[in-house]
Image (cartoon, rainbow, N blue to C red):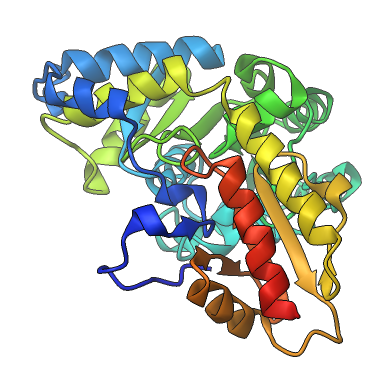
Length: 356
């Protein structure tokens, strides 16, 4: 999914649909970054970072927040502060925390992952979660943490509802477990569901979200939770090498992201639906536009299509569009700020050429 293209290719001439991580800072972000007031964040003296952390906590309805370098660092540092050596973590079998973070639950948290296959909409079957919680038996590990991904990437960017989040939060509380949400694209979920980010974050003990995906900031993620918990996350961040100094330059872009880029995510969702509707009409493409609810468009090549996903991506690249293989015959396109409706239509035409 992370295929690179030659650095001499001009981004201005490329329709880059591989991910929303490819977004560049907006002109407004570049301006505030140049003038950002900075200090030493490890000492808690960077005023721009402090302002970003206060805003993030307020928007998610939590006591405190901490700025970290990446989504992986956000999830790993939070996980490390929830578990003890030998504990178990229940999470989705197709989640980023299980598949895409180098086994950090074991490697860094010294805990054991218990993967549960998600429903097609990205939710975890509640009965399966409850069945996976260990009895109080000295032979068994202690179940300590439940994790949920919202939106769920591999399940098609599906937004997970407030009602479900409350249900799994209540289940965790019933059994004395902590509940963490990997909310890398939480704001996409909030916009798609027309709810506040705080409503989605409310049941969780901790939540992470990315500034550098659809929100367009160049670097950074946030972890939000209680004041005591975030104080521990700061320590975990430091040992992971994430204690930054004059990083207010980066936080300034994050402030623009949170104050100007959230509501416009609906444009990306509309563009994703536009792309899905166009692709679904092409012979050789298998796609249900009704399953496209945020900014991700997953589709499959039909059995009669004379190529695999990598070959398709290579041929599409020759026509000026980049897309990510997500399986032998499965692909993913991600819409974002730097993709226009005109480029969506150009991509549809390029796909027609590839498959004709």
